Amino acid sequence: ATSVPGIQIGECFPRIAESMDKAAVLRAVVGCEGRHDSFQCMTGFRDAEMRSVGGHPAMGSVLRRLQGPADRSVPRYVGRKTDGVWRNPGTPGFLGATFAPFIPDGEGLANMKLNGVSLDRLGDRRALLAGVDRFRRQIDRSSVYESADTFTRQAFDVLGSSRLIEAMNLDKEDKSLRDRYGRGSSAPAFGEDAGPHWMDQFLMARRLVEAGSRYVTVSRPSWGKPVTNFSALRSLLPPLDQAFPALVSDLKERGLLESTLVVWMTDFGRTPVINSAAGRDHWPQAASVLLAGGGMKTGQTIGSTNRYGEEPEDRPIHYRDVFASLYRNIGINAA
Image 1: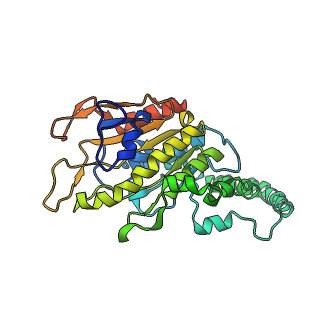
Image 2 (image 1 turned 180 degrees about the vertical axis):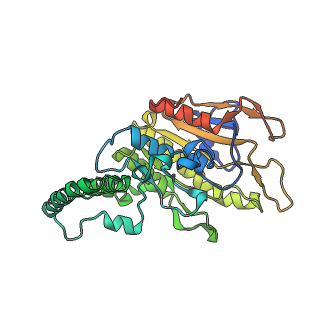
């Protein structure tokens, strides 16, 4: 049972159950491909659609294109560095490389710091580069050069301010708040290739939004198993049950929840029938999405499957329609 009468959730999610009044669940999401690929979770469209012109851009790229920066020194679109399509933080599609996500990693973080260069020297370098750019633009106006200009401007904005570095420094947070989110590890999860179970990334997402980022992606893998599903999930799900409600409540306490959409989406559902290996296989016929904040009407479920959990029965919602609602709440007409 959850905090909303009539709504139930899996037994491994007691904290999420307590905060269900702050969330809305879509229980009959359709249109997914049924393969490991986060592309639809970032765009609402299938990977093959519009591929001839670069493909559909991720929502973060769209926001970066249509909405100006809240703070020029903080990237508008930030994605966790990941490998492979399982947890791709999004691609810019036909918008081009200029609108790709900013992906901070170990080497990238080091490059964001002024090592032995003062702000005055940085200003001199910017002036020199501006002169070179004016000469270069007279020679070649290609999109490659224009993209390079954008990346260079962003680099100077980041280097000229400590705002982004401070946002990513979790040591500035109170230990009790970090414990509330949970810690986890940045190491690969259980020897898998699906990325780390690092709960700090939820807290970092909140800090980045607070600093001025418009769109931040977080990848939390391994919560559906084709083998030994039930024994595995009893250890895999509790950290997620801790981090997600902590993020929602933290945003609310800071007055950010109404202006921040929290979207929990997957690449497909899982079979309602258990296989011979005590696991659940890919099931594209019906998936679920959980939404919180951002002006959504919460404390409700929308849609249902038949009594076997197999096929949508009431109010099926396509991935594209989910994104249409997200864009609408942000103030963008997606028609």
